[in-house]
Image 1 (tube, rainbow, N blue to C red):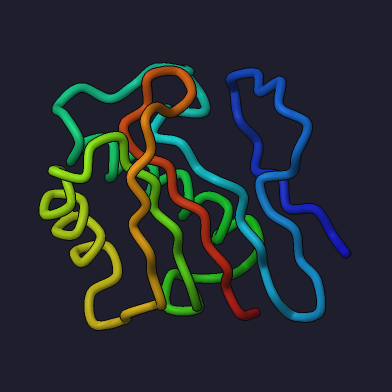
Image 2 (cartoon, helix red, strand yellow):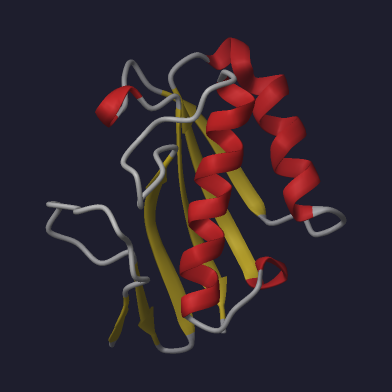
Length: 124
């Protein structure tokens, strides 16, 4: 196994790796909708939060030498299922024609007041 750790300017106190490579697969930890450099939440509602979470996902993919077209599966956690359409719109713009397996899970709250968290598995 090999840890994948992008360089972030902000301090993350969590006891985990942003990603782990094992047997040709990249397992990406939950990427919150917080900027990992400034530790600030985006302004603009759930669409801005989704875009930030996907940007964070991109950083881990890039650090591992992978691209979004290699993502096999995603789990998206949202604090309000009423935001499904907005989350789906930003997600579909991000992935384009590529359609990884996916689940959207409503949760009561996320850390730091984030509205979205996304985890993924990619094939290397």
